Image (cartoon, rainbow, N blue to C red; front, side, top):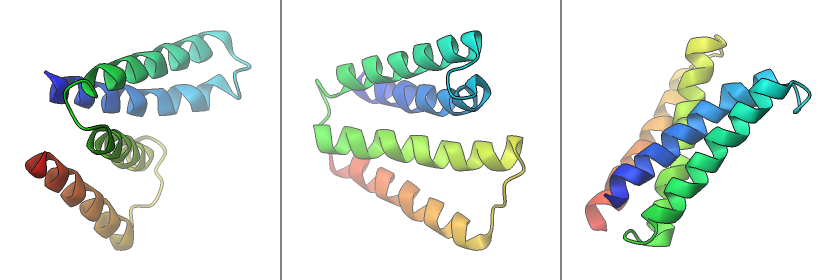
Length: 104
């Protein structure tokens, strides 16, 4: 259950990224409310996941999901570049997350 909550936490953080962009610095009400809700869900799920997963592992995986998800989302939605060097770095992050999962 802890790993499922951790994945939900990471995906909620990824969901907050475009909402933060659309909130325009928390000047637009509904995108701001949605961003805060997504981040609150993310922190809640992270806090529950660390009850069964070592905190260092959980935090590294959570930030890894958020980082990779934000880069992929940026490439898909905002047409940001996805050069081979970025793909290599994303692969390193993903390999690290898999390694942490296998050793936990």
